[in-house]
Image 1 (tube, one colour):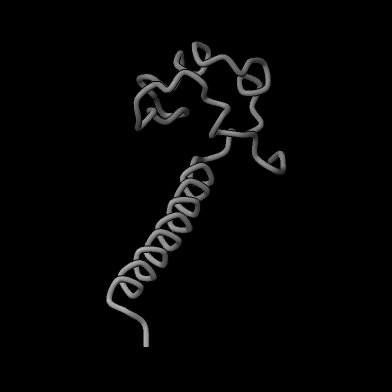
Image 2 (spheres, rainbow, N blue to C red):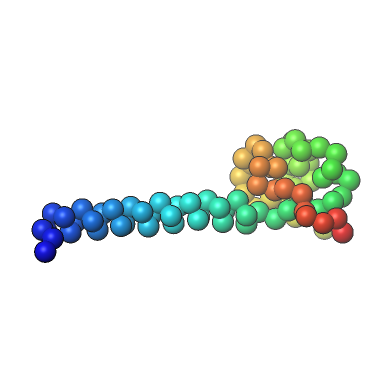
Length: 85
C-alpha cells in the first residue's frame, strides 16, 4: 500500500502531465484559429505588418478590422489559404 507522501507525489505528477498536455494543445489551437489570408493581390505582394495595417487597422466593406493588438508579424499566425478562390 502506498504511503501518503507517495500518493501526493503521484498526484502531482499526473496533474503536471495533464497541465503540460493541455498547454501544448491550447498553443496549437491558438495558432490554428487565425483566419487565413485570401489570394488577393494585396496579400500576395507583401507580408509586412505595415502593409496589413493599411487595410485592417480600421477596416471597410472589403477588409475586416483587426480584432487584436498589433503583434508585429501578421504572417506568423495568418498564412495563405490552401486553395485560391
